Image 1 (tube, rainbow, N blue to C red):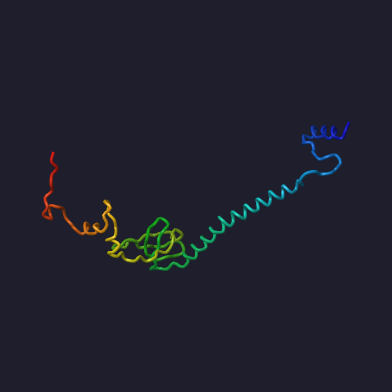
Image 2 (tube, rainbow, N blue to C red):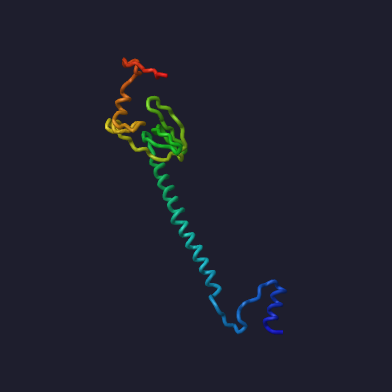
Length: 165
């Protein structure tokens, strides 16, 4: 029996694939460990890519949010994660009490972790912005004039015309 036949019978008995290496001991083709090293390198690059694009920015965002939550003081205007705007009346380690509303200040208890950020003070709207808006028909500048005119046509002395059939 030749070496090839002995190896084939041995592989059938042990349920292993026969080796493709030449019998003289010389190895042809690429080194089998090179493929393994290449795969390990690709997996390492994938993990680095995931770290720098997903994990690291999220950690920075969380640290900034923690700093903002630790710097909150009564009297500051904040926005919650649900979109409620209010002024902090009191705050402790677990929750904050916000005063919301323009005239009547309604007090709402909110978890401290659900405060999304500080709200910047808004500048009052100027009359120029109002005059420059465009109404539904596309006419600019007449919107504020129409809004300032109150009452119906009958109150202003005009008669309504009925459609003729």
